[in-house]
Amino acid sequence: MPLGWLSCKTAPPTGIPDKVNLPDTFARQTTTDSTIISRLRWKQFFTDVHLQTLIDSALVGNPDLLIAIQRIEAARAVALGAKNANLPSVNAIISAGVDHYGDYTLNGVGNYDTNLSPNISKDQRIPDPTGDFFVGLRSSWEVDVWGKLKNRKKAALVRLAATEKSRQLAATLLVAQIASHYYNLLALDNGLRIIENNSRLQETALEIVKVQKEGGRATELAVQQMEAQLYNTRSFSKKVKQEIINAEYQVNYLLGRYPQKVQRDTTFAQQSLPQQLATGIPSGLLLQRPDVQEAELQLVAAKADVAAARAAFMPSFQITPYLGFNAFKTALLFNGGSLAWGALGSLTAPLFNQKQIQAAHLTAVAQNREAYYNYNKTILNGFKEVGSAIEQLDNNRELVDLKQKQVAALETAVSSSRELYLAGYASYLEVITAQKGVLDAQLELNEARKNQFSYTIDLYRSLGGGWQ
Image (cartoon, helix red, strand yellow):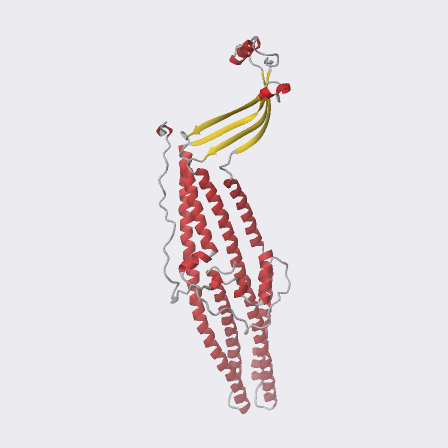
């Protein structure tokens, strides 16, 4: 039978592309080495045993990661329902009812006439009121002719995979955060040692000036200036100690535990991360970054939603069989003659609810476009993060080299200024200037080294490393 009269007109395809075009390299990258650092497991990348212990604890107790795992469980439940949606449903039925038919109704006249028939037995006589008892099975099965249920199943399963990628993204971010805070703590510890070392040097210089004053070779002003510089340096240590406390609070929060001492290495200068930072080719970004993979899976799921919405314009075919015992008396219910079975096939096509179906399709199309734009945006963000990390690493590496040379020169200047001051060829102001300069330079070098760790971790994370 032609179906044109059922007004089953499907919607046109969306024309939304499946992929985006990618450039050949990142930023000012000159190599296309495919052995990218993101393929290193985080225990290979971070070799500090204290840091490994912290990351292991965070992957077990971090609240955000635990929430992500429960989202996976919820998505798995949705996928389970969609996976079995094309299977027939079978229900066990026990039903009972009673009817009294009027004398001038079809059933009333029919029952009265039947009871007068000599062809029926006593048990077959229909009582008044008439009972209706059923014990058996009823089933319903929608035949997925147009792939509506298949596409809904596909969308649910793909979204389940996307939630796993979301968990991997949370793990990647968590590993990077823990590592960044850890090296920040090491840098703060080292900064505190720098301040304390300079305080001791300044105390020695102050004692020298006091001796010079007693000998008439220095003034009270020189002593006061030296004391002021020493107090200022000591004040730095209070600020750094508070920053250490704040950093430890943050680490403990990420680990999902209450505040406590964060065990860590006592050295900073000996710390290192992999130096061969091959970034690979941009297509590798799609294979490693969990957020890109999640966005791609969401795009696939959105396309399946559109296909299911298009199929909703077509007729649906359902089969509803039943099997059981049916009788008008309970005493006869399980008699062999009460066994009943049947099946009904129905073809249902939308007529007056076209606007609702059209609205659902338009919504699915809009969500599909949103998923595509989000996919594109995620890739753009990935390129921005990778390119920025590469540039920062290159620039900061040069900065560290320059700061090391500056510190070496200023440390020599401090020694020279003291010797010249004792010999009477330099003023106390030159000593103060040299001491302040070396302290600032050492702290700046410490900060630059910390940033080198941060940028390396950012590059590792932005390339998709850390969830393995």
